[in-house]
Amino acid sequence: MFLGIDIGTSGVKAVVLDAGGTVVAQGTAPLGVQRPQALWSEQAADTWWDATCAAVEAIDADVRRGVRGIGLAGQMHGATLLGADDRPLRPAILWNDGRSYAECEELERAAPDLHTVAGNLAMPGFTAPKLLWVRRHEPDVFAATRTVLLPKDDVRLRMTGEKVSDMSDAAGTLWLDVGARRWSNDLLAATGLGVGHMPRLVEGSAISGVLRAEVAARWGMAPVPVAGGGGDNAAGAVGVGVVRDGDALLSLGTSGVIFVANDRFKPYPQGAVHAFCHCLPGMWHQMSVHLSAAACIDWVARLTGAPGAAAVFEQAERAGPASGPELFLPYLSGERTPHNDAQVRGGFLRLDHDTGPERLSQAVLEGVAFALADGIGVLRAAGTTIDRLAVIGGGARSRYWGRTLAAAMQVPLVYLQGGEVGPALGAARLAQLAVDGGDPADVCIAPPVSHIVEPERDLIDRLAPKYAAFRDAYPRIKP
Image 1 (cartoon, rainbow, N blue to C red):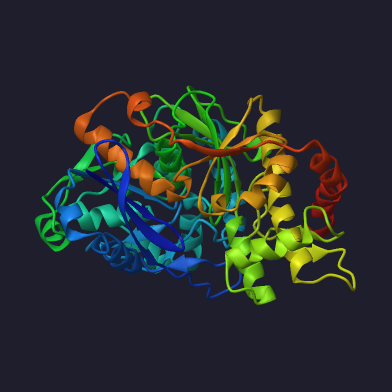
Image 2: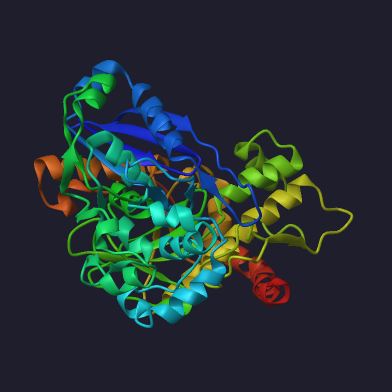
């Protein structure tokens, strides 16, 4: 059996796969996010470790004893700064933190080859601009920094004693030569760092270390190998078999991501498309990234007094698709693709006296769908063909939302059994590859199809004028 651990933003999930690839056990533990100032988003690294232990220990002890390998997945881009004692010097600055927008301009000037080498625009969500912000605003912390790790790799350090990252997560720092799959001395120098500040790099399906004896004893398992793992989106792709050139998925987690696997490095920074390494050797991927997706569902639940996401979907279904004039702009944490705008904020437009919780909920579902339609449009402009999307993440639980999503993006959505398990499933598969070897195409197979949502012509037509109004709204509200 193989254990996959996903260090997410809102919680840690642990799953165990048996030899046949079936999920036999799961454990979860929540995480909180601190926002001490506008644009800021932080977490204490110690909470990742506490939640990881809680999630693993929630799995039955007999199951844990049978684990032969562990894989890690996690939220990308988070800047975890360690001092000489390998302890965090400050809370980690997360992927949806927007404070370093000014430093992005500085990095673009300091590293003229950034787009070619890293394959991406400088955005506040990435790791490198965060370090420029720390250097400017917290110089003592910057001077004391000996190692910069990503969230899952800080957990790995506590598990194995090894400072290691994988190619897919490292690609999200803006310090990686993504085509060559190695750290770039020039990009690191542009932020006052060197290779010595970075973890060792391995492929996601390679062994990165072995579980420390004291951790193994606590978790009730042998000192098993720990795979390199992957950034959350790449690991999620592995979990549902998106491992061949042209395979694509839609991830509906806290953020929303359209992910396309590529057999070569295909940057398209002019459209704010992300081009990263996949967590499998010899593979890359493109992504459109939208900072608020399922997070918007939780937000409107609080706004309308709904007890949770399921109630929001019920409210929206009572209203029906395209039932009212309301528009929602889902930029609660700014936006990446296609706008690269950390300072824009969300809003409702075109409310009237008949607007209520039902139509607000429907507008939120549509607003996220329209943002994703923007993303798929940019990917197509980059020359990428997307014939269908496998759907994963918590938002995959709602069949009703799927109708709006498919119509807005005009692409069939393939819902997979167990697709909501997400990146932890891929992490477990990477552990299986690291321990047993094999062809990823044979090991990382797609789960059975639950159902397919085809775009409805009538709904496409009804949503079209609202999408046009949505596209027109951003230039009017941007800072």
